[in-house]
Length: 141
Image 1: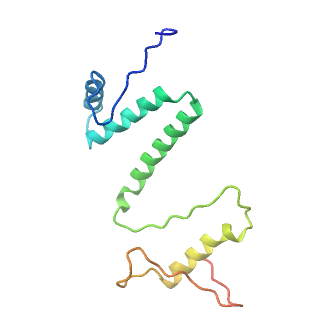
Image 2: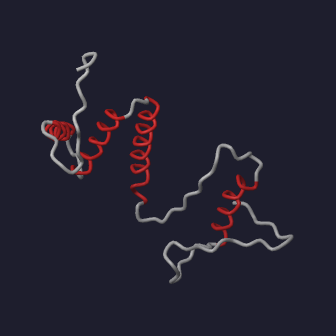
Image 3: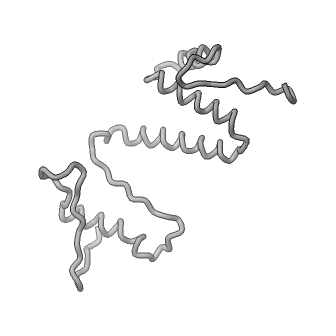
């Protein structure tokens, strides 16, 4: 023991962790209504292992924020689990007037107006991208 801190115990996702697994089970019982307990156990173990292995507070903050945001996103989108979704990624480094910044809003309006989402027997998740002829403008949403 150094500076009053305990030595890190090796933790395993696949093997029993003497004492720790019992505490995790107790914690889940206390919290109540924990679903998919084996998965939640692994998530708790991952957090503990990260706390043991990462000397960087910044790394831990990033992991913590990511997990909280993913939990909230799953909660918000749960009612729409059966609906197909499209994800558009952007960049904070893209200038506001860049064509790349404007394209998602423009194309979204075109897809809505023209109902270009494929409902025929095409590949799952496929959609046709709107095309623009020279001199033709794409209507915005």
